[in-house]
Image (cartoon, rainbow over all chains, first blue to last red; front, top):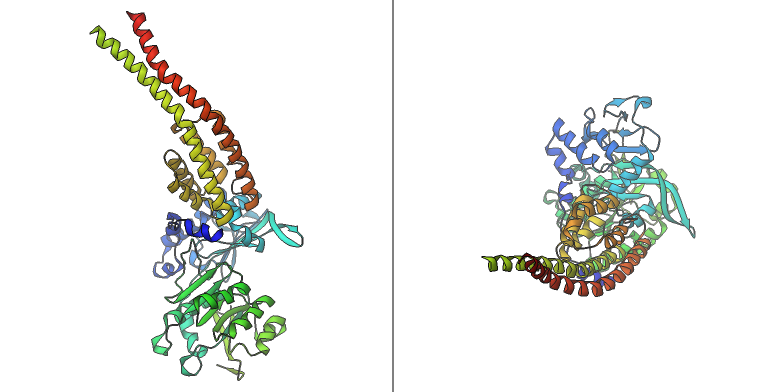
Length: 353
Length: 169
């Protein structure tokens, strides 16, 4: 039935909405005050009337620096950059917390309504996991009161906080890193990227995927077929089947599928040479990963941990490390802004590269 | 001259009657079209989890005027960020004059907006199913009623014309 349905529905047209999404790549080329204001206006459309007018009037903070916009019921509206948290007044200026614009319950409800395009059912599964993905790959974290049904989250109501995390493309990091991720004969090694939150894991992963997929001739790396398991819709920023981010010419994306199921599906259907995924850590994912390894596919993944020692304390990650699945480990941090490479380790010899 | 005037009056009244009859005949057709569209919307929501703007875009392409315009406006409004409820009701206010539907039909049609897009798929399915059931009842009655009324108005127009001519003579 569902297959019949998929075949009978016409290919969705790319809506004008999609065309309005500013691909992050464009940000680099254009700069200046006007452009930053344009991006603020572009982002403000996801919020209700009041918050929208506040965000549209922001002039003091350059949008290119913004990492997060946070809304909490009854709390000041905040904009976070790598080095500072700003409280925003009703007029859009930076101010002290007691003069800031306080977000109301209505603000959160209307933001959620806009972010889901008035279609809560379409974001049902994501909401249960506590997030939404907007066109452009920006992720919105959602918390509130959870309703349980037989021990599983059925839905979230009375949403109390929203956190819009701006997705960005930082190119160039991957190219610097790639030579140390290659073994003898120009073969890509099984690689794990670890970092604390907000240190640019996903961004770096995206960059690496593009490089591996397109190939880098100066490194002798031929383009390889990459299968991307985009469980949370962040990596490719898929919108109606069209990826927002450039992930390379030889990349196939399985969008929204749990990694544990998706891995074997990807191996069987698309025969990738490299499988890339975000946020490995669940026991089911690890079991599926061992299955996939038997087919000779290379793994490129990220995980939450701020150092090798911390990773070893996580049972699932430790299991992977002990089994010697990964050949290279990259540790990222925020020491010099997001995306700082702290160290690259060869896990087979224990050397630092 | 007199004869020409008489013919004019009869033709005028007659065509007025025919026009009214045509409007009455269009009502069940429009209801049928909406029922088809709602069934499609239901499928899009339950099987495809398609967001409403995209779903209305599909409905727009599968329906004929005036519903096509109705769904096109809905899609535009949702893309601009309006909530489904206000978008549906406002579109009704703007476009209802283009339809041949009666107030009692619109009451049921506006019920679609209550809770549209606000709950999970099962809940949406239940609501749409209920409205489809109510609409098909209305459509059946409208079918019988419109047949009689349309016939009556198409005759009545000419008859009124003739009566007017007789009085004037």
